[in-house]
Length: 223
Image 1 (cartoon, rainbow, N blue to C red):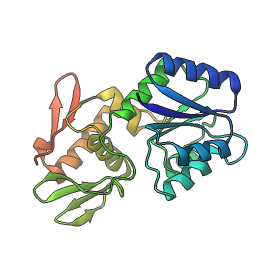
Image 2: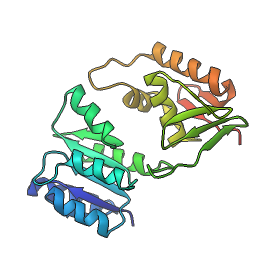
Image 3: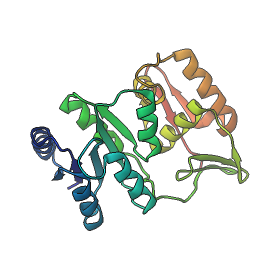
Image 4: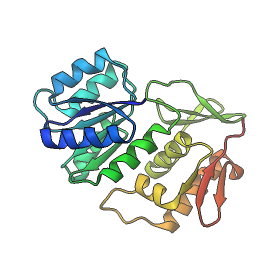
């Protein structure tokens, strides 16, 4: 059974989320302040961290940042009422993998958790993942390497490649890609996505990113 650490200082919301996740087959360890969460992190191995940001003691941002520096690679989702781009940037730079804004639907939370747990690598993975004979991806540094040299990517291409590498072999719908590449206040663009796909194909090979008609795209490694 997958184990989730739930940090949420609102007792009612904590109870509601914990009960819902347990009904859906997860083991939940509920905590109500950052220091308690910090203790649990070092006592127990979790499959996912669900962290409110504004909590008593050490806040969720600092908690995750320090945990990442200590080598904790467990996937993390922030629960937050923050909604500015600067807040989101701070969140992702501290090491989170996703976020969900309050108020949220429990079903959406479940979808985000299940999607994250399907990924094949955590933050602690440092081995390069081969794409083609002379091309690899480093999930820890999020770098594309060609003949051992780092290739500079645009912001959207970098986010898209990271998504592809975390879901290799899966058909990714346009909607899923849109939600990953564009922030909530940005307007997704199909033509822009095609441009990002084209740019990546020039680097990793056209047959590596397969177009699935009316469904989306699939990333296929050649090794």
